[in-house]
Length: 67
Image 1 (cartoon, rainbow, N blue to C red):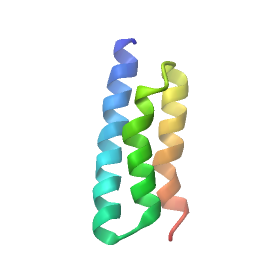
Image 2 (cartoon, one colour):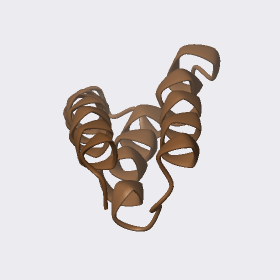
Image 3 (spheres, rainbow, N blue to C red):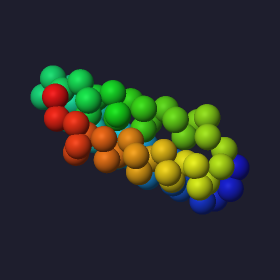
């Protein structure tokens, strides 16, 4: 694990925490699921490039899917 992987993981986990709290309070399933995904996936992705790509996709999903 490199420093970049650790920092990106912390950044996306922070976004995940915000999405999860928002989704829980608003009873919105898409932000809640993306938030949980953003908090969990950095533990399983060792490559920095893949970590950033998945993080950007999971962060963008709630803005395009409104349910």
